[in-house]
Length: 408
Ligand SMILES: NC(=O)c1ccc[n+]([C@@H]2O[C@H](COP(=O)([O-])OP(=O)(O)OC[C@H]3O[C@@H](n4cnc5c(N)ncnc54)[C@H](O)[C@@H]3O)[C@@H](O)[C@H]2O)c1
Image (cartoon, rainbow, N blue to C red; front, side, top):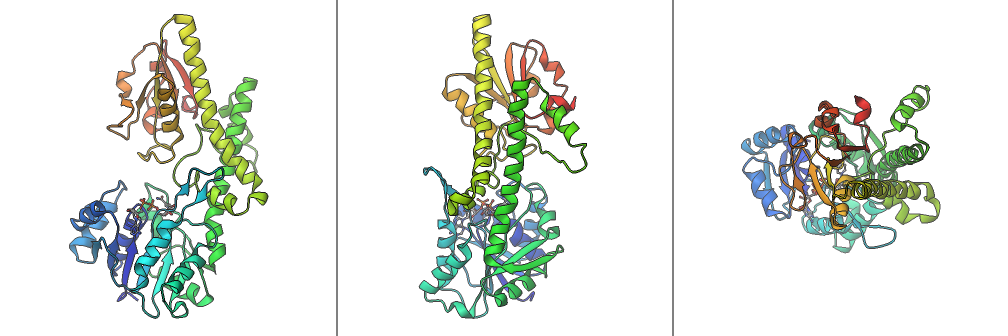
């Protein structure tokens, strides 16, 4: 199989690690991305995204001549589609946007030949793999002669180069033959188990994993609001409840962010509104938690103004969507900071993983001396937990929305 040429379409957080890993396994890999910046950076043996160990893989693949990037699709034997699958925000129920997937599919149609593998890795609503088949058929491809399958990616940013090899994979083909052919390909470079199902089950499996996380975080977030109203420390409560052998409550926070957990449940809801009430409510509870955090900070700031006659500075600790990363996509912390600024509050932020933000003034932890600030801890970054937050307490008002103080 190693004599096959692999064409990876979309060279972002998923496509580029996949391309580099395949090249390191001896495959000849052609990467394709519509972004000229991505393509030219990769062809210099460099990377345009932040991910540990990826740089070394790409450098070695490019210098060995096994990875080349292009802005137009090139002919291969295996096509892996790794393009974005966001949602259309304007609707009451956000609707999945699979235009990138369909456009990428159209772009390779003229290159296909019998026995080629066409694999979708993007997180997609149920039915998308069948739509790929429809698009190819409409473009004149004999779809009975190629193998089309879905194989969702489950890696954790920050550990992609390990998890992309070690994680179990689910392969769901349009036909049993497609499942077998594509699963055999994954077994050449994945050390985890490769599990064979049909396309719809594989699509639903990925959405289920992220919805499960969303629902469980919603439980923790709802609990945190109830506890605040009761004067109960939710962090202590969760630790106590988790001593029960069959209870494992997750951590509350400022909401749920990122381009996966905050997005994918909508792909289920949009398809079957009547029967996805728990999943929808969880989405709403998690979004509501962010609004609740904003109201809490505003109320503290307004009380401060009433009592002292001075407008306080609000310092947001963290802007990223979760701890120890720089990714701001769908970040509740970022949305808290921006919302307060839009309402005229005086806001600065400390984000150890960013040097600059175009709309928010960034300061350092050291600059946060004992002053009359309102400090809202929004993300559990390592730097915040390791820092003796008591030192900044002084006359600052500390609002902890992610349990950073509970660790002291
Ligand atoms: N990043 C993750 O941790 C992660 C984990 C699991 C699943 N996923 C899923 O994988 C998919 C890709 O995510 P990502 O994080 O790699 O996105 P990304 O934005 O980092 O990369 C996608 C790339 O596709 C390119 N692109 C868009 N349209 C194209 C086209 N028609 N032809 C070629 N290139 C095109 C973009 O320029 C971009 O470089 C999404 O469905 C996402 O939900 C991501």
